[in-house]
Image: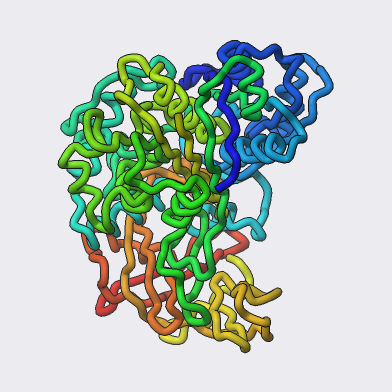
Length: 396
Length: 140
């Protein structure tokens, strides 16, 4: 078990399609997090930005971009890119600096202005990029992979499209209560079933949208938190950033094929489950200790997958867990009380940070109408393209 | 489409991968620089044809036109195609590919046997870009 860091502040720019630049979203979120922490920007020793590649060249240097916008003040700076796991890696970078004694207080920022429609690879002829190849050779968009996973669950575990729709119904009901969510309207199973098929068996309302948005955290050493008057802050106890183990035998975005299991036996634990296990081991907790979870519901069916990977139930039992209301508010382990990506949409570098913002508010008892009573331990889970794990354990 | 990913015509059509001479790991798309098995001391990578037939691991389709670099004619109405992930038993690998034209998700089930056949991804006046396709066995 490693030492803990304190979450002094959390802030967001609401998700939506605002049509403005990612810097604006990030600065708004950063200022909100600093205000929440009661920390002056000039007293921040380090800033870590989660990169966006969609802002062009400036997006690759997110840390300095946000630092300049907030006003140069000489802080240590870093920028990280790990696709959907960028936010978790930014948090991890900040944590490592704090635990190493390089900085007392660190600002972590992620923000994006997402394009309309499907995500697509950067331009040019780039056959050395697996992301470019899957589009060029197969036209395999992100939703087609979600469709493959959903169909596989139906064939192996007996899940139904109605089960998938219930995930959307659950998350939309929570998102309706969240002022930072893009979609703030309840959705019925009939509405999901009436929406257009995108990638069989998944429909438009089974798949998360792309959005603009920003999220930020102020992290500090426990000693700084005490001096700062935060005697019992929310603490980050673990950050998992693991890679898969060879051979990775579940077809993963953006690959055209799995690893072959001829030369080495598979570990028996799929990649997503290994992300969660690493976080649990580092935190010294297990799934039975959780009060809530925020997971990456890129599709409704994928949220069910996470129930099993997080150890909330056995393999194949996720739909049963959902039907029994275990993962709904009032259940034993509510999942995505923020409303999830179903309600937010993807703002890639911000989302893993936004998950930690939500659990911070939940653990502090500040989540308003969507508050999970007496929340003590929370996990966030996510996965970045090209083999980036991402999970955070936070406690109160 | 991409050099050295497949070879042959008709019944002789095969996907091409590489195989590590030390540990036997198979790679598709081909890995030509080094074996990626972390427990392998590394051996020569030899080109190998993959099995012609496998079983459907999962499948889906693309009801909306994919963005570039997928090449389609925006003047023509979008025709959805199915995508099939196929498990090859002897290589213990799952390979994604488009279904042959005319095969839809309604024609497919997980576990069904399919075979690899040549296909045309795109063509213009100068070039025909060929590819591989999966076709349920017993379908002409």
